[in-house]
Amino acid sequence: MSYDVRAVRDLYPALGDGWAYLDGAAGTQVPRSVIDAESAAYAAGIGNHGGFFAASRRSDEHTLAARSGIVDLLGVPAEDGVVLGPSMTALTYRFADGLAKTWREGDEIVLTRLDHDGNVRPWVQAAARAGVTVRWADPVLPEIELPVEAVTAQLSDRTRLVAVTAASNVVGTRPDVRAISDAAHAAGALVYVDGVHATPHVPVDVTELGADLYATSAYKWSGPHLATVVGRPELLDTIHPDKLASSAEEVPHRFERGTSPFAQHAGLAAAVDHLAGLAPSAAPAGAGRRERIAASMTAVAQYEAALLRRLLTGLGELTHVQRIGSPARQAPTVWFTVPGLTPDDVAMHCAKAQVNVWSGHNYAWELAGLLGIREAGSAVRAGLSCYSTDEDVDRLLEVLAGLA
Ligand SMILES: Cc1ncc(COP(=O)(O)O)c(C=O)c1O
Image (tube, rainbow, N blue to C red; front, side, top):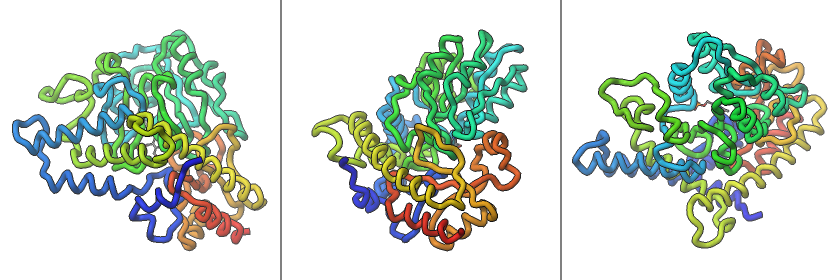
């Protein structure tokens, strides 16, 4: 496997501080190239978009570069199918509002209790306003799998939408999104896939997944605090979110409210280039960016899988640590508790040893409720990322061993 984690780490200035950054599921650090791209954008001068002067043109170029980066990262058919926005949550509310205008009383939508609340609450609230019934697909416990049947059992000829995650942000479960999409399409429903947790860990092809709409946030994959929702331009054209009378009607602009963060668009484009270069020897010479991304994300996935095995083996040896879930196919993220200590206590012990982990529900609100752990502080989350190392994992295991 051609993956040089030392070389990768050298690209991230923040990693020099000696802490073990196992908090990537809540946002990664950014490489020097992203920092430089943003500061270069500001240094060169930017203006509001659509003007006749050079600074304005530069801003439009940054936005175009961001869209074309997303096209290559996700395998989107066209730049016009790339909606940029501040966060997955903000964009999902926008799509929920727009799609709900096409729903009729008595229609149904299917949500899962595996999903981050960002792919749940916007739909629940839009459904309530439209008189639409929410049907729930529950994961199977204790493994926390989401079998295709859990979703198909909730489909009917009134289903308008299935919202499902490509990977749980707490237990890592990766459902069979393709099979779920096929079943949803056969029922006449649209599929909205939350790819926020999956995108940093696996190569993504939205067409192969069968996603009509796919969301991801750049700050989870070494980019700035920005997000995107992608879809076929013809589909986007059928959705009408609220917008100013004076702002553009064309897609994707109609979804992008107000003035965009142009320098961050430059950063997002640089983050995609960064992903394409994570495993330089993995792609054939002369390969295009999409091919290089596929090769490097495959290398990242293999590297992280080996690291996850190390983490799971180590956790398995700590009999006082209770892991939550054991999905067969998962992103490299684990959720656990240490009986006798609150999740916050555990996270504080980790912080004393300079290990970053998160405690709490981590917005897996429905899952924490289903497991009955929400009120007790939920659990501790450790997530591996493209720059995690054996030493990071061992440091976490050592802290946890000391809590016996
Ligand atoms: C799986 C998943 N979905 C949605 C979100 C929400 O993303 P954002 O912070 O961009 O709104 C997150 C953020 O943690 C996430 O992990």
